[in-house]
Image (cartoon, rainbow, N blue to C red; front, top):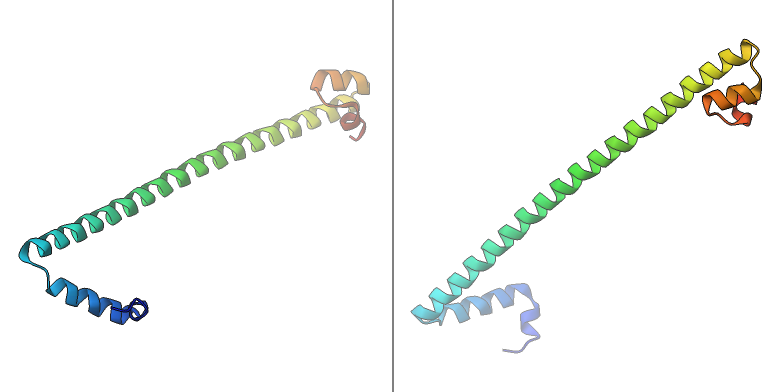
Length: 112
């Protein structure tokens, strides 16, 4: 059979059917077994891919959640320190003393 003919999927399928019809019983059994193995492998690969995607998604969500919590905590901590620093400045403490007690930079304290 001319290879150019099998480029058409309909003709390729017809050729495969004709060739399959010419198989002996043993060849046909081997052919069906090979098809079954291919289907099982394809199914197993699909299942493994889905499982891998689910694991990756769960890990990504956990990392994102941990980062979000850390960022929220850091932001809340900074807000609290700025609030305390502002109260200290109102009470007359120096910029240097407030910075030392709160861990804020001189620029952060001066900006209050």
